[in-house]
Image 1 (tube, one colour):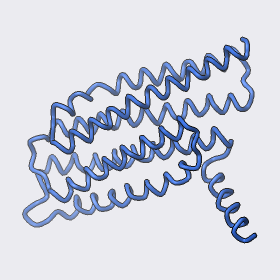
Image 2 (image 1 turned 180 degrees about the vertical axis):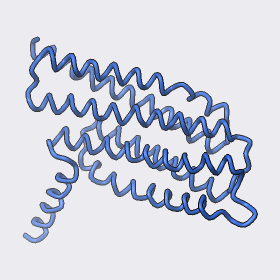
Image 3 (image 1 turned 180 degrees about the horizontal axis):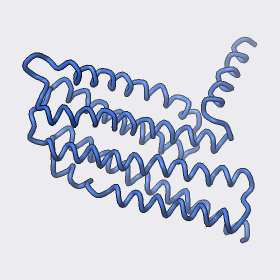
Image 4 (image 1 turned 90 degrees about the vertical axis):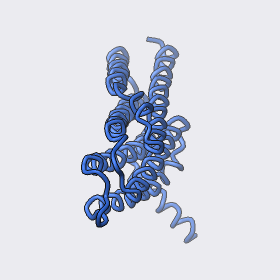
Length: 232
């Protein structure tokens, strides 16, 4: 296979991954809208997307395997194929979690809620959506400097996770919302935390793609370089 053709196919793979990521972003946007408005109709639009996302993920994975079989890639190309598979996995899992959350929203639309817990959930959903979107942007632009900052943004989700779980475990006297909704809220908290993690991991995969290093190693070298620079 001529190198030019091989490169075109690699570029096509990246395009497919980005298209999938944009679809998942759309699902996340609908998820947030449904949570904010208690809109079961918007939530139901996302029911069934899991099957679609998994099928798209399998297509991309199959294309990666075909490319590896048809041409012995050099190290850089192998790194790209590995990253494509890794990022695709994070996108598909995020889509699955989004469907789970939308199902919970649709099935508890009429349930009584605790205002404080709901506020934490919505803020967590917005933040997770934004982190996922930024992770995808980092992959699109190969912007590893932004990837180094993404973990700090994920810390906000961790704080909201702790806040929400505390409200679930210690409901106010005479409040706390309907038991069914509280049970679903506990699951949603976990799902949202995972979506945020997947966004961070997409950024970490981009660091590996560009540098060949795990993000933890790359960050340490980056910090060491800054220390040396400041000391000099």
